[in-house]
Image 1 (cartoon, one colour):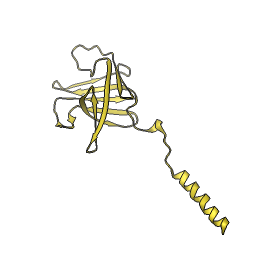
Image 2 (tube, one colour):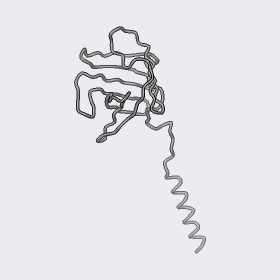
Image 3 (cartoon, rainbow, N blue to C red):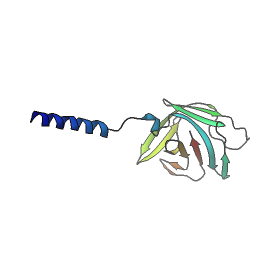
Image 4 (cartoon, rainbow, N blue to C red):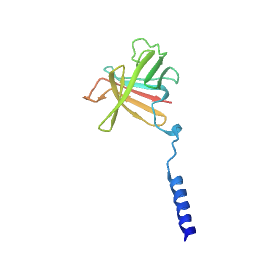
Length: 137
């Protein structure tokens, strides 16, 4: 009887260990890391600009955003200027929003290797003339 109870305990422990989800941060969806701006569209003029990787990068780490904007197209909107910004995120009713330097920048959707920030979707309601920024790692 003792062997049967011991076997049951061992099997239970094995099932518990193998059914646990490992914390593999390399596959988690997270803002942390360097993101390349791939496309910016929208605004009053209805722009639709694409960028090569490395042209505009946003690096998120520990509530600090570092933007490296090497785009030189004159008056065309290319996102934030190069610099260091504070950022935070909030979730309201299942929608994620990003705040940059204490101002809401827009909603964002995230997957392992893509990020979209939509300035037309804010916590105070929809807009019409904002930009949609698409990033990839």
